[in-house]
Amino acid sequence: MGRKNDYLEHLAEVPLFRACSRKDLQTLAKHAEDMNVRSGQTLIKEGAVGAQEFFVIVNGKANVTRNGKKVASLGPGDYFGELALLDRAPRNATVTAASDMEVVVLAQRDFATVLNDVPGISHKILAGMARRLRENDSKRVQ
Image 1: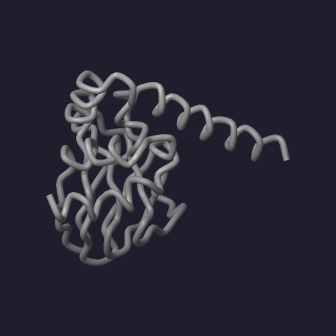
Image 2 (image 1 turned 45 degrees about the vertical axis):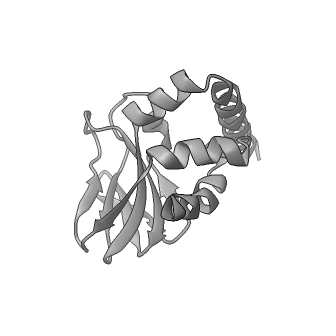
């Protein structure tokens, strides 16, 4: 479990999980997996449906593209795919490793298991989602 505890710091930085207690984060971390990714490997593909996973970058860098255009660069502490935990909609971007990477991966099925086993987390996740929506809404108004 030592390595899983390392994931807590990364998960705690994700807005979706900010309302979660340390115990909640430990429960999520138990279901997360560490994965090494080679440079050039595509982690998620725009428009893809199927494997629904959420990623947090521990080490390395990734590029995000939409419609073939680079829209962002990600590095340690950044995350992507969190909406896939809640919705099985097609991916809205492609994320490709720009270097060798280490990521923490949480699959939608494992996330659903946590929500079923610990229903109180659902309320905290909803609070995190509401916060994210509010932040995005305020950015559009400004």
